Image (cartoon, rainbow, N blue to C red; front, side):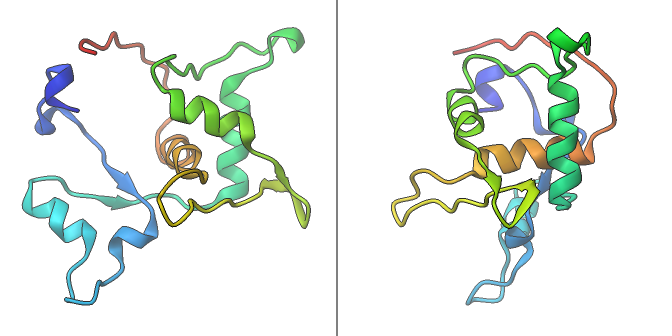
Amino acid sequence: MLARHGLAVDRLRRFVAGADVFSKQSDGSTVASQYARLGITLRPANMERVGGWAEILHRLGDVEAGIVPRLFIHGRCARLIECLASLQHDPNRPEDVLKVDAGEEGIGGDDAADGLRYLVATKSRTVTQRKLRGH
């Protein structure tokens, strides 16, 4: 994906990932160590759910209430858009989003939305705009 957009790994400042990539596998390695061998250092994402979801809502804004959006999702992020639209409040904790795991085939789930939550929870509130190249 980086090559498709003409980016080199060293131009990217931050790679964050959920806790599962730091868990030891049966052979004693971690997914994070596999990325490290490729020159990509993963850092643990801020996993605080309620604050992360609140930050996403805040950054999406509310035009009708005069709150300017500061988070924009490109139309090519189809999985993320589909995932966000299907999120529901957790009935046992309304300030949180109901966790949905992917099926055994890896289809569905809320991983795309969690990735966005990790990003906004670990990135400063600066606004940058970048035009992507490629397909």
